Image (cartoon, rainbow, N blue to C red):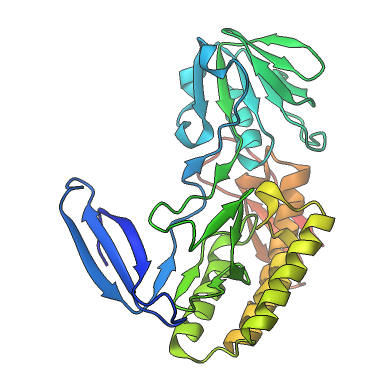
Length: 330
């Protein structure tokens, strides 16, 4: 394991061999010109999917005179005290940033095109605008309904893009945020010594990643019961067709949510290891439901199963100023 190290290039030593070794070039973060190249039996990409911010090309974005940042660079709400702030995006980061800002900002607009929020922000200063952001002036945000909002700061909670700068595009292709060719979103179709662990979105991150890691190990050790290449191609094509039909494209090509449990089962079957326990799915489904219904408060609870097989959400003693009672859910 090497810390403070940047991988600059990874190339197959024998491009015609699906079990090829890899030449990996890397350097210390403070010595970019001093590179080292070594051979490795396999490459497993675990570089995360929240690294390269997605910044939509809004007309006028460069003309904005206020503070502009992506949620990746957001740190403290107090920096926006007394301001009028627009938050674009209503996924987890958008809702959470708006929640934090509501304690200090004068007014917070949360701008999005998803389903209307079912969370009520307690301070009364969060205003939902269920319209697309269309353009930006030097001091305002213009929505699809032609409404113009004067703002001091703009925070883009617009997600991330996939990028693998150390791999050439003829190895990993990214088209409309669809990374290919990967079997089960993990295994390279042509190089079984190249796997990607960090593509999936909206999953139980650590458990599912653990399963993907076990799948990768099974492939490398030769213990995985992999289909023929032609059957893997058919499987990929079938999923692509299904995702297009269900509008799981763009940023949702690798979106899982409830699909993650069948996905885990399929990895376990091929890799010959035990799937994740069903209890994890029960917890995930419950916490997700609680989060959707009460985004403001769900994170203040710890969750566990009591003797009657009920999920119990107990107010966490540390890390919150709220005095919330214990709640028991079926």
